[in-house]
Image (cartoon, rainbow, N blue to C red; front, top):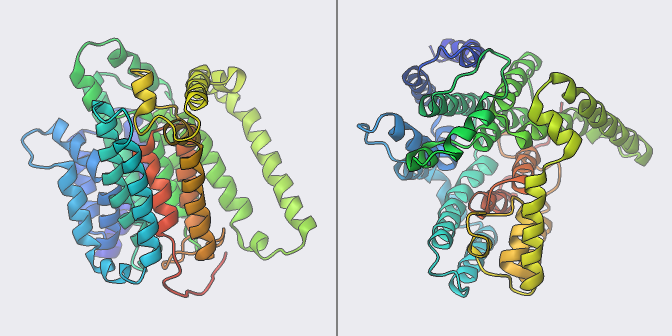
Length: 436
């Protein structure tokens, strides 16, 4: 029975992806399929999904069906319950727990000792950092240490959640793709709520960057497996590519290319066993050539937002980065405190880069302290590029996807996930190294 259901989902995922392009999949149907996937998923895998994505998933379901008593925070706590058997090991991870606690306390002090303490957005930001930091640490600790994690089920669930968000935005904004290869409808549709005075649109709209990165995480979790099924790699890669292109999130598109190239040319058996510097240099050159060729091919797709980015860059983000560095120049030692960027530039929210954000809100002192925590933890635990989770998955690939996101988007409420993922990696088990 279980095997038959897994095979059905393997066939269903690409069919649903095509259905999204033709606008023939109702939200309720997708939700039912997602629930079935959850029912036939092991509790650790489901717990991770709820810890990482339960908040936004619960909110989206409530927006569509207000009568359902489903809340994001409740889903997060349900995730904790599902992975609770992992907590008995955390008592042996005092260094890891102390490091995570130190990072969260540092951010809290940066807020409490700042002039932004009465700023509503700054208060919301520090609450988000503390809450997400805890949930994400528990999720990534389980990813790193539970041998029960099923990467394929994680990927399938994230693809379904991504589709759920796309259909929700269709219903919310009243916009639809014109065909399967219409990759600009969602980005163009954001103009609707930007000029609208309806505050509900701002609250209920799922940002296209979130949608794109969810799809990227989906393929990333599957590719992080050491032992891969080539046919499934092709299938899931095509599904993920279609979803990230549909999202219109440039960071997800370029992140997709980077993750696929990393897995094919860096994290593979042949390259990992090479010790000769000349041979390693050869593979590095191959990666560079592959990236160059992809950058030449992307404009040929005829997608305006990609063509404009490749030809003229992203002027909006350049301005935000400049504003962040200007603020750092004014408060270089300890920064402006958590929420200081938006407090100084109302409406700008954050500079879309974790390094610039930490510099302008925590100063050079905070940047050095937080960077030292990551370096010390990695060296203390001997975490390398080849570090494997207990279910034989490359942690580095997941961390790389997080790194791509925090360098070009989101604020510390989301970027805290990068700290959580790195600090959660320890050598609790001595597992054998398997490569393909």
